[in-house]
Image (cartoon, rainbow, N blue to C red; front, side):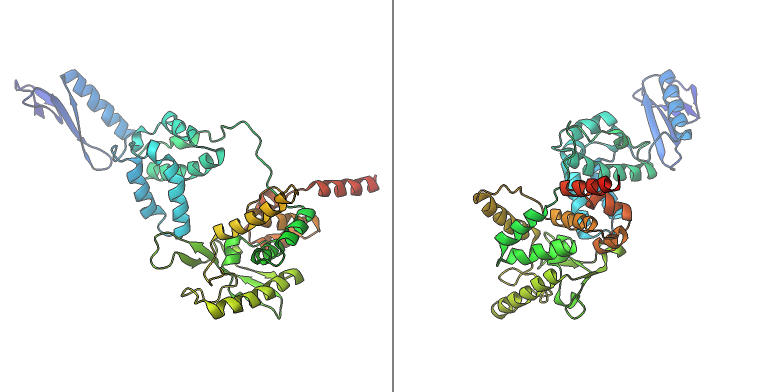
Length: 378
């Protein structure tokens, strides 16, 4: 039992300091010693009852002072330590978007209003969506660790721009012919043909090695991807295994793809004779003219150059991203009657739904052909 300065019994855990301030102590459900302070005896008893009630109902947290920045580092080291370096880089990029507005704040101060205001400042719905995914997982783990009571990131809105989501770009047959024509004889022509003929991701294409190409059986074995990592020792490039087991796959080569790869083989022989390759990357199918690994930005610039040439000649040709080639491959496969399950295997997807929802689009000519079939049946 504690006593007041006048010697009066105050009750268990309550005492009065020499400066007249009352204090109350108790051990919470985490085993931590807690202390609350008040100017009067009535106030200290009320505060103590409230703290004990919160503890009993599990409305308190183990540490109310930890900031979001501090928790992000703990979250990465504790819950994401087995992630690939490229995935960790992505998490860092997505977190950096909200770091300035939220990182310095205590976890306990992250109300839904505070979070929403920070997310409203981001440039696009897509950036809000990806950063929200990271924040939700961070705060879910914080709830599990008894650092916060609830996850207020679940309530925030990421779709603020009032426009319909743009349909993924898919090249038409005419556009593909134009692209082939304007890139003929150029390095990028072979990459485009492999992409449009296999549906491979760009990281898988620039990560191809010659031991993965079987010209006798006309097969391509996809078993790795080439990643570029900053501040990663001597070489910023690394081979990584695909994210999922489904991504490891075998893709049949069409005659167009085979011819492109045979042309590339001749090109590489000439490059190898004059330039020493980077150690560990001696067997790459696609390299720069100095026999170095390619970066995705290199391929993007080559395609942009071709598109500019097309437009300069008065042909209206919309710029496209590298993933457009994968979307185009999938859409063409469905249009030509390929079994969706087979396409799923070729693309390396875990589920059929992902294949159909994300990569299969309907071109205008497909609609017309579909309607002709219906009209014949009527």
